[in-house]
Structures are given as C-alpha cells and as structure tokens.
Length: 387
Image 1 (cartoon, rainbow, N blue to C red):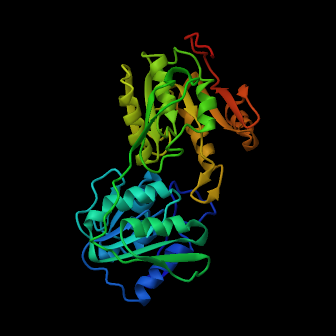
Image 2 (image 1 turned 135 degrees about the vertical axis):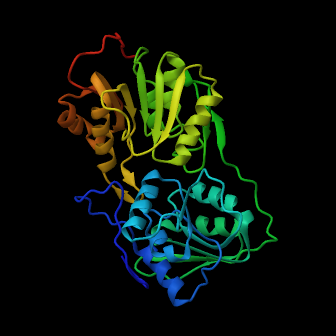
Image 3 (image 1 turned 90 degrees about the vertical axis):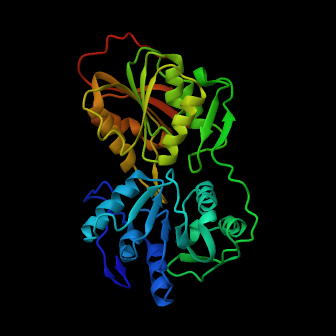
C-alpha cells in the first residue's frame, strides 16, 4: 500500500498466497492522505479503532498509536505487518474490544465496522476519554457509511459531517462536544430464548455488541438447535461459537460433555462465556479466542459443531469455511464427527466429501441443511445418536 510516507507491505492473516483479497482498501488510503495533506496533529494519545488488517496502525506506527479490534485475525495480521515493516515491538499497543480503553484520546481514527452495534459500543466506551480538542476522523467505503452511522457519531460524540467521496470511499469528521449528554451503553444485551429449541428453550442468552443477531435467535441457529446430536459425545467444540447457544445446549443436555467454545471475535467469546455462566451449567467448558481449531491437538476432539460464516467483512468467500472444515478434520479423533449447518446454496456437502470422503444429510428445510461428516477410522463406541 502506498502511503504519504512511503510504501508498506501488508498481508491478511492467515497468509495465503492464493488469496487475492488485499489487506487494505481505498478508505484506509483516503484517511492516511487526509491526515498528511491537512497536517492533522497526531500527538499525544492516538487511538485506531476497527483497523481491519493493520494497515492504519502500520502506516502510523511512528506516532505510537493504540489499536483496538474485535478480531483475533486482524490483530495477528497487524502484529505480522508491523514486524514486516520493522516496527519495534511495543511501539503500537494492540488492544481488544474487551480490554479497558485508554483513559485519554487526543486523536480518534475509526474504521467503520460492518456492525452498527459494535460501533455504538466502542464510541460509548471511548467517549469519556475524548475531549474538546480530540481529532475524530472516521473512514469507510461509501456503501458502509449510512445516515445511521453519522447519527451515531453525532449522538455520542458531537456534530458530524462527511467528506466528498473518493474512489468510493468517504471520511467522517466529528467535533467532540464535552457537554453532550450521552446515552447509557445498552451492551451487553440479554434476552430469553424461545420454546422449541431443545435444551436451551426458555433459557437466557447474552450478546456483546457486534455478535451476529444480537437481539434474537437467528433462523439458522434455531434449525441447528432442533437437530443437534444426542448425548455421549465426550469432547465437543462449538466452532465459530458466536453467543454460545449451541455449545450451551450440548452442555445442558449432557453435563458429562467437555465443551470448547472457539471464535475469532473477542466479543463473541465473551458472549459465549456469559451465556454459559448465565445458565448455571454444571459441566466443564473452555473459552478460546483464536483462528478456528489452530492450537487444538490433532485427534483430541469427538464432535465439532459449526455454522461457518461466508463473508469476510464485505467480501463473500468460502475460505473461512474451508479452513474450519480442514481444522475440524485434523482435530477430530478417528470416528469423530463434524456437524455443519449452512444455506442450501453454499454446497458444503461437496467440500465435506472432498475432505472426509463422506457427507450425510441430517435435516433440511427450504433454506438450510444440516450435514454430518465422519472422520474415517475406528467408529466411536459411545452409541451417540441423533435427536
């Protein structure tokens, strides 16, 4: 990426030479040009929120910014890109959305996220550290910035306006108003699950901002909950756990199960842990933020439950699903099972047959399918069946 201060080499994480998606876009470049051309002061505490792959933090490393992200993959990409650029360790402070925010912010640079709820939560968490002299600039592609986005900045921080578009990107300028009466932060948000969804029927669920379908149970998860495997699995992984309702359902139905909740979103894993604890489940559980099943010992898992995403920010891609399926095959014991729910049109059965040599249709409706793939080898002796 060419910046006003020279070129930086950037990659996404995990690095894949076949991946043609860039680690930056026009909105990153637009923000950096604005900062340089307008001579925006970047002294004091510089905070970069939502930096997707570390493009902004790497380009601005000389100003020793603090980066805040919800994504483990983005944080790892940032760490690798900073090292590639020769930035000394510790020059850029890498925080997650679950960490306490800085107590003072003199320049706030916001890469607008896909989730308006996540933006709301982060602005509300940072607002006490913003003062009248804070420079606030947001950036995003035109299709990502809506009237509701601008209203959020204005409601939480102060008067807001936008720039003309350049290369389908736009900037947001906000003038902080310390006298503004800010709303209370509604996150995390809790609600009660409906009936007819198995062991979690009528149970509480907790969602931190940015987690998919934060205020209701999405129809795909509802369908999955109605067709989960029966008790006796042993070690179970809720892969891409979101708010953790699937893994919590397994634990409620079978207290002897050991459930590992995994997601690359810090907000999601915090939600899963809160949901699990809110239900008072007596069994054993582990909560891990990471890149799928990387770090899980090969052949150590009996059952993987997965509802894979098919978007990476604004890009539609099956790379994440493929990595999840591959990681599941490696982590499963011989005879272990991967259960997947997905939209019918995604054709996950083809990928599962390529990886596992088999794929069974467990359940379907006009929109979704639940598929089961078994890792070839000795069959589990648990006698576990389907509901």
